[in-house]
Length: 177
Image (cartoon, rainbow, N blue to C red; front, side, top):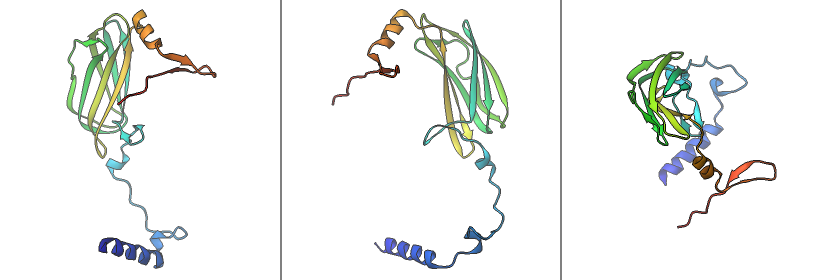
């Protein structure tokens, strides 16, 4: 309780004291410090509260191969790249083609990946992890391989409906406890 009272007194005291020139909006203050290198590193977000690595991943897919291009939009150290398959795709080349590397902002790294894909649609996933700016970050990009099989199309269409505006939505069962 004493801590809350002391905090309240400090807040009231600071609110009632005249503002220093540096804190008043109508008076110029000392020059602002330039941001640190860590603060300069762009840290894009996949969604609110979920920082990701500042790396853009592109893939040129061909039969059994992918040519990956990683664009580093911010500096990173201890960077590793992991490639893996989803829905039956198997990576036949090295799963971790990059480990413990450092990259500067603007660097580009190209990699070639070999894989075998099953019939139908599968995915090649690329995960880039490392220390970017203020701390550890990771990003994952997935690339579709192949066309959906008839069974995959049926599975995908199950439970879908269209809204009056024509938007396709999927109705899911309620979760029971």
